Image (cartoon, rainbow, N blue to C red):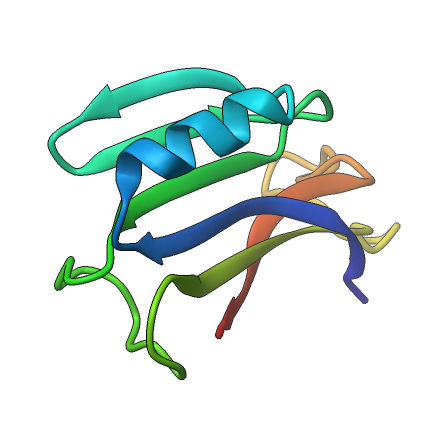
Length: 106
């Protein structure tokens, strides 16, 4: 059974990328990427914050007008069953395993 550990990544669609750059830098996030697509930040706990243009077609549809959260990717931990083995007879996974597969669209 997976357990939610925390947010791995949040993605925003925004109209003013320069204002977002200042905002997240002022809050102490580290800028780790910047290109024509937008900005990528990292928080102290490793959470990624991606800023994209509001009209970016790769983003999920906005539920409200203006700058808003578009997607949250949760970090989950799952435990491997104790009896799961590979063909060689060795355990096929380690427990716990951190994955980022739980996605929620705003």
